[in-house]
Image 1 (cartoon, rainbow, N blue to C red):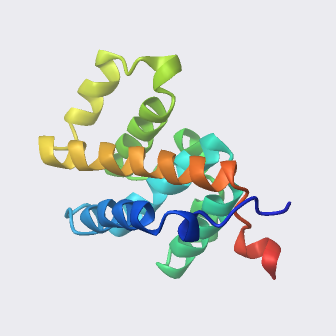
Image 2 (cartoon, rainbow, N blue to C red; image 1 turned 60 degrees about the horizontal axis):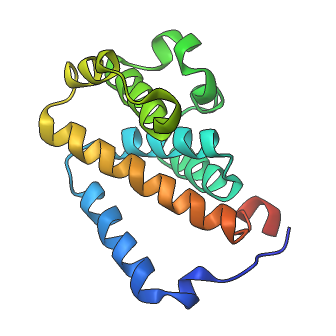
Length: 150
């Protein structure tokens, strides 16, 4: 796979703006591992190899066990590997990422709102939207995953 363009170079101001949103999420109070699990799941849904590679590496560096990492696509069957907050975040990430299919049903919102306060849920939704944007940039312009560069 050949990279089509270096979007960081093509629009440094635009990418800096996305980086500002990323910084907001890091400072939101949501746990970093939780956010990276969400980023990984969103990237898996979208089929973004670049971001799957990046966030898998981030989670391993943060001490997430390989057994948990490989079960992220099937987290519902992961039992105690995923706590209630992680399950709520992953379910919310899936329905929001697939918004055209799901319409984000009331039941999905109510389940997420039962775990997260309004600020947390808004910030989590921003994180999901941000990762969907990054996935679209990386997929559209064929960003090369680190694993392929090795």
